[in-house]
Length: 269
Image (tube, rainbow, N blue to C red):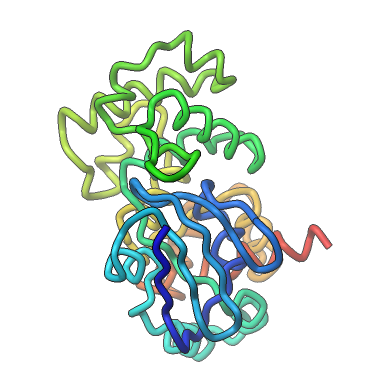
């Protein structure tokens, strides 16, 4: 394991980052410490309030800097959001350490297909089962990398059913085959052409996999938020997205993450 330290970091909290719904392969490992995998590397990460320490099987400083989005000024993002919409201030303060990770697009496609009508513990278990069966072992770790499109394109539906993936199994295989055939999708319309991907999942992939920070995923939590804050009908997802585009612009994805974390995390306490 090699150790990489990023010093004097601001606007960063590992719990906020890993528990805001954007990733599924990181789990708590002691106070303020998480273990997980990114790309073909396993890692244990810790933040002590100023320094981010990454103990990892591989990946250089540039890889992890990019992964944690350390060159983006989140202080500026929060200021811009609260100046344009003061109502969001409690959420930006509560989830002040959120950063949107730079994750692999194919991993996000499969992960958010699995996330449909699912809960976080089960999503994590499903993904780790998939990695254990079809992903390459990570040297120096007991973890496996996320499976390649080639591996999942040839997956067996019965094997996926045994992992309790249910109706999602055929979606996973079809998505991998289409990814191989057409390459990485570049827009929401291309994602919606995938078997089993609807508007909510497409927007999650746009935000977390394709780095479209104007994307505004609308799930049950966001519907409740938009109802509470602005009086939207709970069924008016299209109206919510149009409103977010006008209100938050290219920062809509950041706004969604702050609001989602604020509402969901407080509901657990």
